[in-house]
Length: 477
Ligand code: SF4
Ligand code: SF4
Image (cartoon, rainbow, N blue to C red; front, side):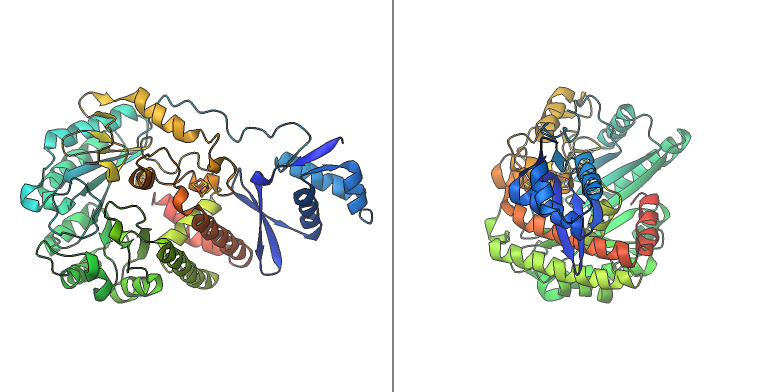
């Protein structure tokens, strides 16, 4: 051995009570390490580059064969290299095809509510809403099947504005798609995020019959929900939404229904919001989306509030862990997703499927990276008539894949965060290619917390993953 070079960007140590875990950053795998491994990693971190003499001097009282075996293990993991540069984390990716599984249809730019924080640049009142024509929806489905003819299952997402304000089109699409996909021997599922106000028993039963995956936008108890989620006339929408959500939950059988909470200035009480939505209203799960970069800066969470949000997420995360240790899932989506990513050992090259597995079609047929970009100033990537502008879209994704010279290249959560949401970056820096650098430390703290919980659950309640995560995946959720 000449010398060994430590590669700190590939190893992250996390302590969970008396145990120590090693997070292998390239693969997002987690290993339990003992005191000797810890001492070896300590020496490497201290010196950066170590020689055989350094190792002998530090471990004079240990079995040299055992130390050599451990070092070989670290070399295999690229945590140390023997003078050569570490292997590229993944081969350079050239994007040539777009394996779409999901198409998002913006069926109406109009919404019957007028939430103060809404990010949609193209949002209209219902009367002025621009509705998607059936022909555009049809061409969107043609595009989905043309780009990905070999998949077994596909997803059609209805988005808005408020998608139920164009229920006629949703019904037409479902009536068209179900027999069409069935004739091809393929499955199609439908999903929809709604403010719930337009739901009736008849609509709920129809959605249930077609097994829609439903998410209701709701921000918690009345005082918090009504701060921002208001009617066009400016009144709080809580009473109407809560009544409709209860009716929905009482009737809906085909799939669990979740709530999505938008966290903004003054709406940061994570545990209180979760408790109300899960235990008082009865949603199966609750997911939180912090707003850091909306167009109306008054609603964006400032540094202090964002810290409060992540502390709240950790507090709820501890309740998730305590219940998981007893084999129960309390329905905290952000935490559950993180557990799923770690359990599956997901190593993400890109933050999400936007632009590659999913495209969003605006009301006029333009192709956007995802639902949040429809109506924004961002260039389109083609339209449903002329098809995807593949070279431009591939160029965008390849630029994001290239981490050279970016902080993400050496970040310990790079393969879970992958530079963050394009829309957050677009809203914050006017550049979707720039990583979401504005809250990296909080994200790293959140992932570290998740790794600790994961390590604890794997050791003390491994059955939780088989009972609550494997079936979720099998259901395609
Ligand atoms: S955006 Fe920040 S937290 Fe995410 S991978 Fe890049 S450096 Fe890490
Ligand atoms: S770009 Fe952001 S909002 Fe769009 S799908 Fe990805 S993570 Fe979600």
